[in-house]
Length: 233
Image (cartoon, rainbow, N blue to C red; front, top):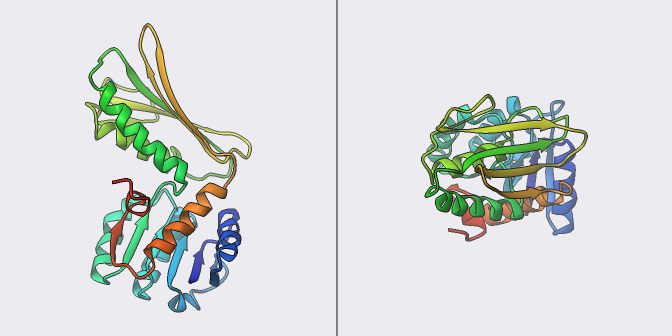
């Protein structure tokens, strides 16, 4: 399979190594200094760039009839626009805040726990996410996905980085050293606490999941999620 890497930072380089180990070919390594030359020859594009570049990368891929796997976060105000372009071009698209297989299992666990805890008003939910100091957006896309998972299965209506109101989930975002990503969901009551936590040890899980998603998406049309890729529906 021929892969275009849109974004060639730390994650892009790990994705490259794993893709090559799995027998794929890299036809484009796109960063801020080069063009999209070679994109049209790709079977699939993997976008791990920055928020300001993601929309251009995704648009260029759809316009070149190349399906896209995007793990960039912080650009979702343009999500509906990209979905519309995907449908217009009969493209294929998977956008996820986190491609780690473990995190996607964690998403399912979070949603199941939220359904249970919604029966007990004495527990209040909050979240903490910790990432490396180079991460540009806060809270992380993964934390937002976790909050949305709770909101869809409870009486909470929003998340906030500030002091939470009764119907809001407070997310505390920390930037420390080179932490790949740690996410914790807490349910606290006056008498006890329940906590679920996912800790990434390195970037390998994110990269492997993205390559697996790209292998699954190649040749498909439509908008999909990691639940489709991992058959978690």
